[in-house]
Image (cartoon, rainbow, N blue to C red; front, side, top):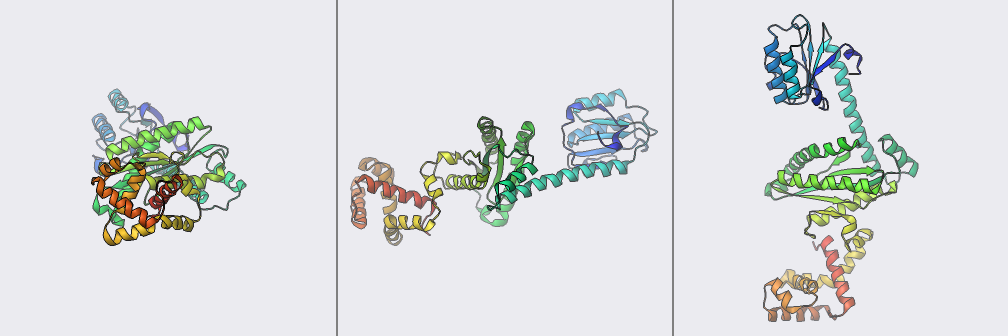
Length: 396
């Protein structure tokens, strides 16, 4: 309404629909508009159109509501000195913003100015996304450069930040193909976006996200930890709704730890994705997890030398793995279950569905192969740590 071309335009009905997004501008050219619109269009109706009267306007409003149009502008022309009361009432009932201008208005000017606004918004959204990518892909940025990037996004640099990562695990075999995975992820992200948009609009926050082959990532922020955690709770509710809609997928949601030093945002993305990988491996019964809640797995994340982790794993488990591979003896599985059950033979045999004598035979072999005292606390701790590393870096 602030555009110069709208200076003589009046909103006469449908105020409750004013929050609708205008996706494009469409000048009515046919009797029925349904075949030619996709949703969100702002419809222009000429008062000079032949056979355009009250009944036609009523039908048009019904079609606009059915197709989720964002609004209608009626040019008075020779057909309408004013808009009939029935039409105004109908627009109010349907929540279709109805604009009216007496006399002539240039549809070319209206189209040009509105589309310019739409393209500007798309540019700014794309700019925000590219700035997020710049922030994440430039670990060498100085503090000043990071602050400038956040200012450019309209975000106070001293905010509290949290990274949220949505991901899915398909049960459909064909989605293992990369093309199908891409299509599946795009479909998932569109469905997700409808719910997430509501949160950002409600809280008047900038939406910073990126779509990847394995996830949809969000950088959320607030003035304090309490507000930030409240947003996280909204994301958890969204995940529950998406789970109902995504029948063929498990939907996971992982969070980073809370970040107050904005130089750690990159690390936050790494934390959230590390947590995502644990969830998708089924290492927790949960489908939602924060990095701060993954326990000892945090230690593995913070160890940069992968080779040392692999060496530690191999020291305790490599020989058992090789024997299992050659003879299908299930020694690794047996040892892990034994440790989980704190050495309880009866409980372990029940979990493995084997006789206790079979279990005892396997444990004797394991002790002989490893040549360690499995009852020793320090040895048990090392073995459990080796299995934890195995969760992250399985034998190939």
